[in-house]
Length: 280
Image: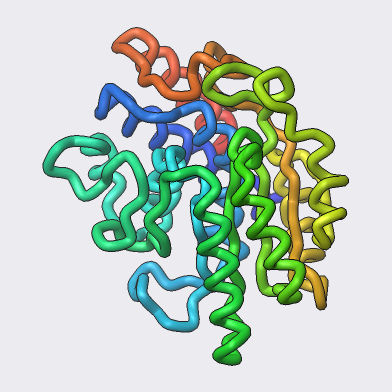
């Protein structure tokens, strides 16, 4: 990856984080922590990895993305907006009664959303179905899905993984955002999902574990996933919950609440400083 390309991706990820803060502050509700932790993954998928067209969101041959951890729509919406699917200026309408940007993704109202999700554990199942459909119809498109590490406590996730391996869905890539925290605290004390890598391998996946904030590592991991044949791929990304906003980082309390006026001002000041440094 060229330094100029990496810098542009970092700039975009910072803008995505700013969108997360703008939308949750505007709503006075939402889930900033897990949206911020996944900013690099969202950015890489939509700005580099996936074959998509913002001017034609329903393009039949596009790659698909399913946000299995459906509550982290602030991150997805900020990415879609910055990619040109809808205006960035609409982000502060998040969760408002008359807004098309509701708290969970709705494929019927939001351009670029491929699946309506929210009930944890179900998104990966729909992604498996999409990948099976592509195989059945001879399509070359790929399917990606993002799960939370707390979400994989759900049994349905593992049923979906078993099906993905059984049907040799090498057009499927699942990403697990391993930020270590869920709504009630640390995932390993609430209901430990570890060892995540070994479990996915036992279910028949080709598995990689990387730093989820390192674009070069992300690029290499997705490249290997595309090259893998005969089995589905999984990428476990080690991340920091609340990444980019000092007082949110590694704090389970920021799983599902919005910043107040002072917290919003501080978050935006920090992110604008990061953006200025990247753009210098």
